[in-house]
Image (cartoon, rainbow, N blue to C red):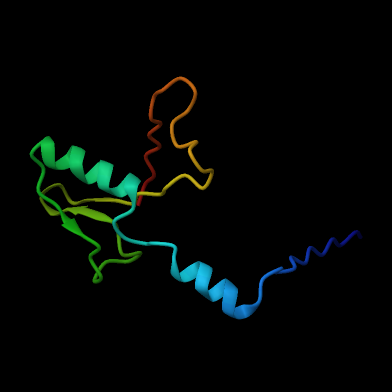
Length: 93
């Protein structure tokens, strides 16, 4: 039996890590604003960040009983693939 243990060492102090994490936004990110703008231009009515729903979805379309979670790209400036098309991956809820 082979057991591999991976231990990540944080190179920042607790205070510096806390400061860095406090600068990361969870609402009104650029990808979220783009999706909201598109939905608004298409005439959809939506609600934002419903706290009474599991997972607190970014966008809720109550009329269509649909929620949208917007996840930004972790790789800086790589949010659009080389072909220039935005990828859409539907996930069942």
